[in-house]
Amino acid sequence: MSVKGFDQKQVPIAIASLVVVVAIMVCILVFGKTTSIPTLETTTESSKEEQTTEESTTKETTTEYTRATTQAQEFKNTGAIIVQGNRAMEIFGKNENGLKRYAGYISTFAEKVPNVTVYMMLAPTSIEFYGPEEYHTGDRSQKKGMEVAYAAVTAKNVKTVNIYKELERYVDEEYVYFRTDHHWTARGAYHAYVAFSKVAGFDSIPLEGRKTGKFDTFVGTLYAWSGASILKENPDYLEYFYPVTETTAYRYPNGYIRDEEAIPMQVINENPPSGKYTCFIEGDNPVTKISTNAGTGRKIVVIKESYGNSFAPYLCDHYDEVWVIDPRKVNESANEIDLASFVNKYGITDVMFLNYMFAATSPQYIDPFNKLLGT
Image 1 (tube, rainbow, N blue to C red):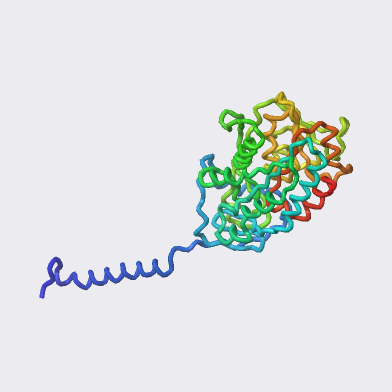
Image 2 (cartoon, rainbow, N blue to C red):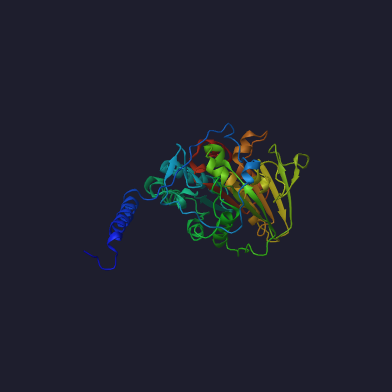
């Protein structure tokens, strides 16, 4: 007997090959492609804002950004952090009462300075855009949390700044958040600045044409907190952008704003005092004062935690003075500051409250925050 198209001896071979192909297809359909997550290592330096070693420089990084798709990848939940692919993210839980209280503190303060424009700006974190769906929906939705806080504002001189849409436009195509650190990048802060400028009534200045620089490797807090080796093996890079205007800056480490207390500093420091993120306004200090030649007649004070550090340099192009106050550091300093008195004494025209979503309900931040506001 013969089989058309085959030699009789080839029939068993063809049948065997067909069986192998079918078996492979069945395996793919049943098991799919899996992504393995490395076992998390412990770290003894979890309080550090950045950990870098010579080993972390073994992987080249470039200024060209490609978003790593994480939505369909497996992830490891360490309790407070998700590690998914080569990205780590803090787990957020919406605290409606805490967010309403935060807005209430700002409203109460604003009523003390009725002739000053007060801005309230909450910053979402990376898990809102890159994390698994169950970690940015429902009670974990930062967008809904922002809406709760903004809706709770009662003072007429408070303007809320919704930066969500501006950030959302760029998360797929630009380097907006670090993967190994909980902060946004200088580009993320820039898009927040663009959103703010629209509310504040001035034209934002493009990144193109600014003096800029970059650290090729940066491994931040989320590696320090999680110890996930994949983060260390895939470091971030860190960009910085200078203001267009000329600046002169001082920090006051004891909270006293006196000439003898002033320490000269740089708005952008290419040789940062500690971790690389401290290249922005030299990190967290009780009080920082930046004088510029913007010539606008406006003065602003920014109340922030570390999310505000990479944002503050952009304000220098629009204000004659940019003051930056970190409530946590004021609380640790020798001097207590009453914000309303500060605003009146230094002729402040604008006050900005810039906090990332976690800080708005964290007792470690809110307690000194409330003390500064005197509410």
